Image 1 (cartoon, rainbow, N blue to C red):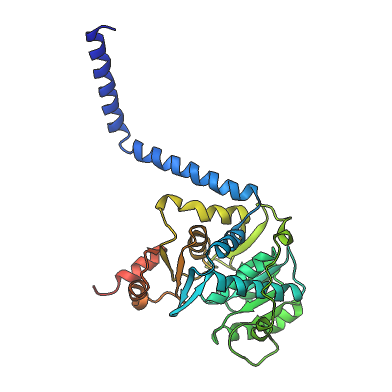
Image 2: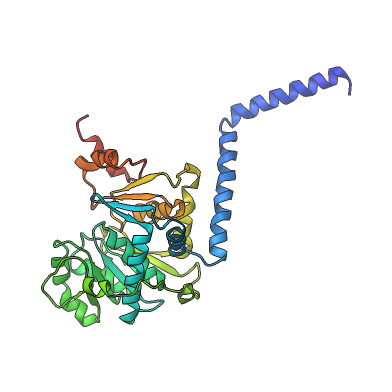
Length: 323
C-alpha cells in the first residue's frame, strides 16, 4: 500500500471513529456494562445449575465467615454464625411441628433479626414464605394468608402486632392456621416459641432436605400495597430471588460495605435487592425497625453505613428535614 493510500485509510478511520463517538458517546461505557452484565449472569447461572439458592448463599457465608458481623440492630451485633444457629434451631422446631417442603408460612414482623432467622429457617426446609405487610388488618390480612395458603403465621416482638392477630384469630382457627409468637409474653392461645427454641438442637438441616426444589418453584410471596382492592401476591421464584442478588454486581458492593435497611423487609427493595446483595457479598446489614427520618443519617454516621437502599418517597421525606 502506497503512502498516500495509507494516509487516506488512517484519515478515514479517524473520521469514522470521531463520527462513531459523536453518534454513540457512551459506547465504551455501555460495552463495559454489557461485559459486567454477562459476567454476573454467568455467576448466577453457576448457582442455579448446581441448585444453590439464597439460603445456600447464606449457609456458605456462615461457614466461611461465622464471626463476621451480619446484622447490627439497635446497637446489638449478630454475626453470620449467630443467625445461622438461630435459623437451625428454628428449622428444627418447624420440622418438629410437622411443616415440610412445599408448605407455606407467613411472617408478620417489623424489621428485626427474628424476621431474618425465621425466614432462613423456613428456607432451609424448602418452605415457601409470605411476607405480610404489618400495616394490614382484618379482611386484607386474612386475604393474604388465604392466597398464600399459609399453615402458620409467625408474629414478631411488638405489642402493636398482637391486636392484628387477635382481630382475625377466630378466622385463622377456622382455617387451621397456627399462630406463633416470638419475643415477649402475651396472653392468648398462641404458641410462644422462645422457650421451645432455647432447647432445640443447632444441628444443620441437610441440603438434601430441599434437593427437589427447582429454580421455577416459589420461594416467597411479596404483596402489593392493596390501594386498588386486596393486596395481590407476587410469586417470587428461586430464579428471580437469586438474580436479584446479582443485579447490583456492577455497582461494586464488597464485603467491607455496610448497607442500611430501613425499608420494611416485606418490601421487594429490602428483601430482594438489599438483603440478597448483602448475602452475595457477605457484607453487613445495619437494620432499622422502620424508617425514621430523624434517625436516618444519625444511624448511618454511627454505624459507618456505606450503602443505602430507598424508594422514591424516602428521598422526599429526607429532603423535608432542615439542612
